[in-house]
Length: 269
Image (tube, rainbow, N blue to C red; front, side, top):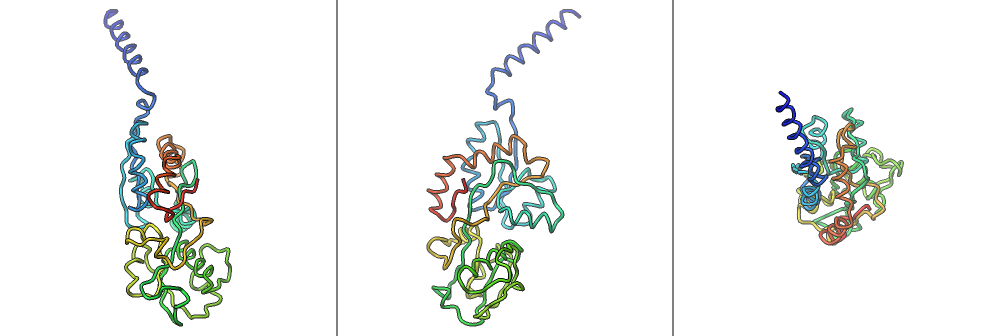
């Protein structure tokens, strides 16, 4: 028995020595599953995959084409986190769905300036009375669209500080614009049916639109709609997820965003 105990002790000691000889990241190996919309979020995640792998983190990316399912999937535990939304949208989602999803540590990643697009007019000044205007049907992005129309001088809202304004909150509408509220992902496809559509940049890019050259009006970089990584509240400080956000905020990622999107997506750090 003494021999067996001694042998086990030696084997245990050897294992400890071998484990200790590995790089620190190998001791913290983890797999994280992150939901994202295709452009630019999944592209940005693909770009940091090698750095995460080197840190002992295997990143699995699950692509979504809408804004609701990735939050539900995180809340239900099917995903560890998601990367597609800004903080105002998250706050609205939590309030509406009674969820407690939270922003992962380290702050915002980027801004996607929101724009107005048209195949019928070359300027918003050309819009005729009663023109059809398509906007997102979720409260925060719909409010964002109305704020941009107000910035362009087309309407005036009852409360310019309300990020969740709806068409019912329009106080002045000189051109009697008619608003069509559609799911955000459907807005690029509505361009043949409406006079102007206000489209989130990720969907604009997917549809082959260039926000810098095709948008009739676009948000400035002071936009409060900074995109963040989101998880369940209990997971917001997990090392693998905080490392994910760290990699999304490196100088290398900043340069990637600047080079690839040329201003259509702007770093928020």
